[in-house]
Length: 239
Ligand SMILES: N#Cc1c(-c2ccc3ccn(Cc4ccc(CN5CCCC5)cc4)c3c2)n[nH]c1N
Image (cartoon, rainbow, N blue to C red; front, top):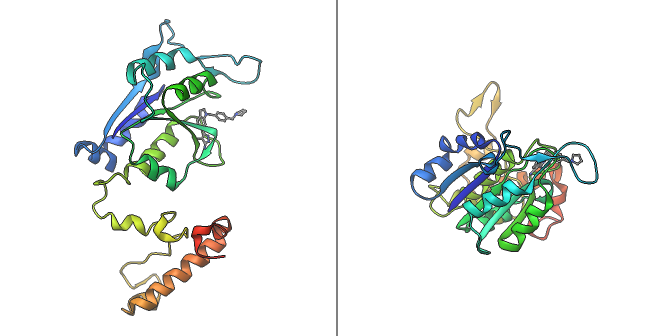
């Protein structure tokens, strides 16, 4: 899998070198390429933004640098196997199932906007050429797309076959299909007693049936408390 990042702050993606994703890069599982969008500007100030047509606050990212960067990084041929991701506050909420779908992609290009966003014609052009995803991390405001690109990268790459030492652990995670759409149960390890707080006795009983039942009950309790929206989904197993 090749991952490209287009941003006016490409140094954001240096962190990928120290993370597990960096290890995957060393193992040849993924290729990471970060690009400075200003490399495709031609004026002295390396301008990437301009005032919004129709008025309004802030600045909008000009289409020209994006188009020239696309030509060089992706090419000028249409190819639906190339996935181009635009993080945006107006995007579709990014989910574990979206991460799973993207984990089989051979090429992902992250377009990290800043200011108030990117001229919409850039997205329209990309849609005419490649498979485009306009996604949002959640209902809160970030200053640009880089943090979202990092989060999506981690969510996707950890699902790439060969990345996780023990792929079985993926099945027990929150939001994974194997977890019935429930939140993960609370986790404990040694010492059994810590600052007057003890590991629940059932977990020390060695009785696997009771342990499984306790864990399920805790997942149901937590999901009902924190994510009632998940309790109505068909996959949740609780209604
Ligand atoms: N993923 C994700 C994101 C982002 C995100 C992603 C990409 C960019 C590019 C620029 N910004 C800054 C920004 C912030 C607020 C607005 C809204 N407008 C302001 C005045 C009228 C509406 C527009 C842009 C971005 C923010 N924020 N939150 C998420 N979950």
